[in-house]
Length: 295
Image (tube, rainbow, N blue to C red; front, side):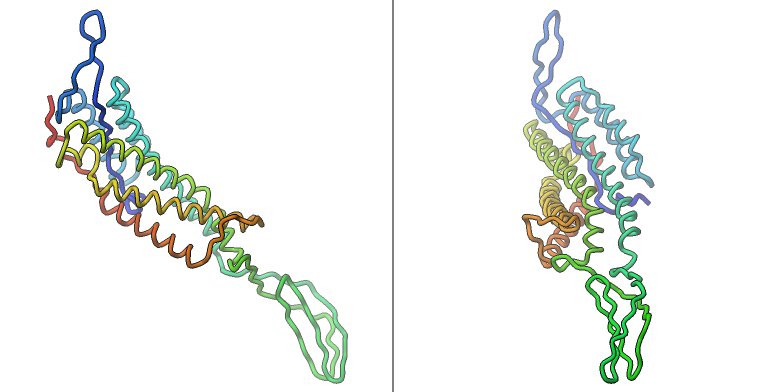
């Protein structure tokens, strides 16, 4: 089963523009774009793209090569095809980055999340201080001090193993390093989510301007609810990416300008999860191109 499909989902967003150029006789003339009607070329090329994207993205495995090829198939012969190809490519790029996030998470967790604390062997130390009947041997590692007390004897050469948990501004250093490991991937995927939202909003606006409505509009540019989901997802992604960036600075020993409290991080993480869930639920593509009037 495609793991990315369960994470976020995807719909084909089609960009529509108001005009196209056609050559008539010895000079180029502006051809009037039919209102609420796809041209023969638009209908044929968009149909091919839909078929390719369905197989590439919603099949058993994610086929990025087929996905990008399906987007490029629309060519660049008109503003419509150039815009459609760009919007389609942005969405495939988002899927590619989501796949990389999953790979990064596995790698980072394996490296840093084997335990919430680190165990550090301490060197052998010698303490022979006798006071009355109490001898105290003290071994210090990092910020952890372990005392050994005996009665009536002198303790020499005591070896201990201490469990040390180092924190920075209340955060476990291991957790901070894990966040720093994950942060670059989350920065990239957040950028891709924002790019998809921007192109989706523009595509929807242009489809409406062309006169498309109902099922045809939803097929070409996605329903309005999906655009709202993308806006929410992009906003939530921006917040969690900013949190990760600040915590990464802490992990590197820097002093970030933005102070992240644990409650805020939890809240932002929950908002991101809820936005992703809503987006996924509404991302099932509507494959009813035949509902669009066409030449």
